[in-house]
Amino acid sequence: MVRMATHVITGAGSGIGAAVARRLHARGDELVLLARDAGRAKELAAELPGARTLVGDLAEPERLSWAFSHQSVPERVDSLLHIAGIVDLGEVGELTPKVWRAQLDVNLVAPAELTRHFLPQLRLSQGQVLFVNSGAGLRASAGWSAYAASKHGLKALADSLRQEEQANGVRVTSVYPGRTASPMQLKVHQQEGKEYDAADWIDPESVATTVLTALDLPRDAAVHDLTVRPGRRSR
Image (cartoon, one colour):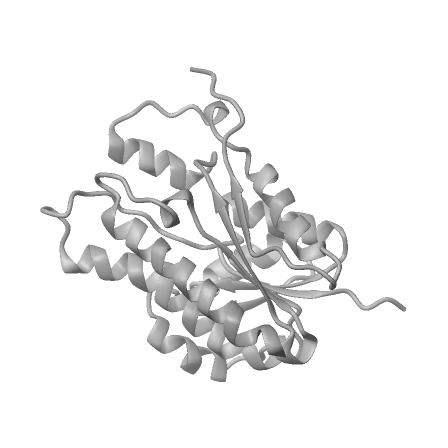
């Protein structure tokens, strides 16, 4: 009997994370979905029958280890998929420390802490850590300083982790999507004061295809960085 891979996923509730979770669930893989609270965990479990859940709030990375110590965590992990994220735009002259810390905690510190927690399992399986980063992780624009800083930091985390874990057989991939049609993108447009049309941007399913391509690559190769850009604009 062929053993299905086990994936720990953040951000499975919407956008890219939901698309990736659906695709992996449809092919029979084992899913462990991180939820911020028990209510959200129940919703995720109902959406993807058979999936397991873990409760832990990425906004409080210092409490994740404590939260997991009170739950049953998977003994085997083949991939850890960091897809959750938050964004709040604003110019440097306006952003408060609270806004900075919120984005750094969810987008950078929590992925680092989750990776630390699951590295023993990933080393045993010679698994993969995949970070869904952003185009903002490669360049920063006006109004994007805090979000871009968190994503530049995520790139640094991935690059360091890759070198540190290569000898252990753990692959590390960063995916840098451009603007993707999702609830987060709607929020961005609202903050920018722009009209939102999902048809202008990448379909989350297209990014999910990119993620699965990296995960399914034979073991004799590794994808380090993948950039995905919108292929067309309606206007």
